Length: 259
Image (tube, rainbow, N blue to C red; front, side):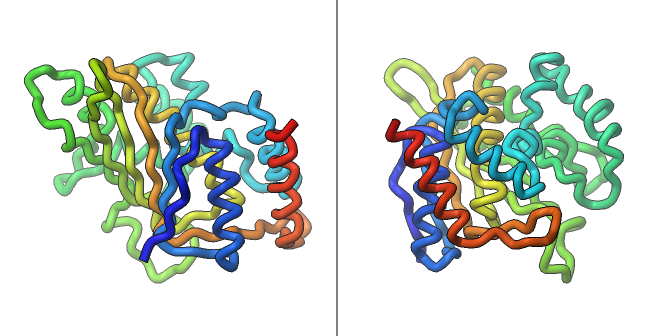
């Protein structure tokens, strides 16, 4: 069983059509497949739809779009510490300042660059992928996997919290005379109101970083949400967002695009 959403040109349009489709399915669906042709387009607050969604999330006192995107790739930090310098800056500045402890820091980027192997030694999965893509001696084009699910930390009896993104698979694809970098990711659970747009933007920025460091071009982003939910976040007063509010948000975003 799967539920494909037609491929969309950018992050904001993908969010609109995916959320609309899941609402029509009764507020949840399984094995939803999304495809973003250019995940770096429609990916900042300059886009009116992104800005509208961000304002809505802030009004509900949940994480805004940029905060969600930063869990996947710290864009502002990367501008200050370009290239591989971002790894150490993230671990020493962002993670330390966040004061996170326990099995889940809330940052997928941490697991991409500091996943502990069976011997306890931390592995920088992202740096290794970039190194292999950049190496002309490496002929593999479909062997660039990144793991964010950790069975030693994430298997619990709690139905809440923890990581939702489980796995990513980078692929090199010939497009004329250039190589393009595609990414397919698997989510075990996906909140389409609170998280999806920020997730798409963050994944697009991650792809842009890997592509730039590897000397290739950004390709398409495919997302498989094994369980997708048109969630109804609660605000600071514990009032649950209504379905009509979510539909009104979608309608407002549609009007922005139509103008």
